[in-house]
Image (cartoon, rainbow, N blue to C red; front, top):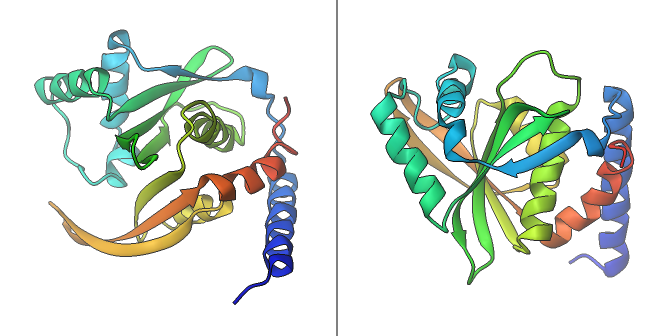
Length: 207
């Protein structure tokens, strides 16, 4: 059983580790250069191109090439349902990635997410800034309480990134794709945990 002092000590250690991580990575993007805007119908062809990039498809549960009809049906569903909240991430006015929330439940205050940087020639740390703005939106603007993530177990980079942001493992499951069965690590981040990590993150993402 952990005491309150133990919990506060763990939080302080997490914050110090996050600050050290930012310093090692040389991150210092201005938050004012980063903008998360709602995805709109005019984005559909660019987003389809992003979804079909081999690097993006490789780490998704659906890894086949997405045709125009399938994409339009998915796009319409995302834009018309309250269970989804998808956003284009812009850096200095240029669309470079996507942050999507789905399975949103207002009663429980929970949801799941997906994200990726899909454009090249972006500064180091752009992905960190994108996740920062996404989490701030989910827990701040949307006032949600728990965010779930599902990561294929061999995607060690994504698992490490989630853990740096405070996600902890909740369970595991398996999925089947055309290339076989894959183990999936299910993670969760609570609002309280994010609020503790947010302060450390803001130390290397400038306002």
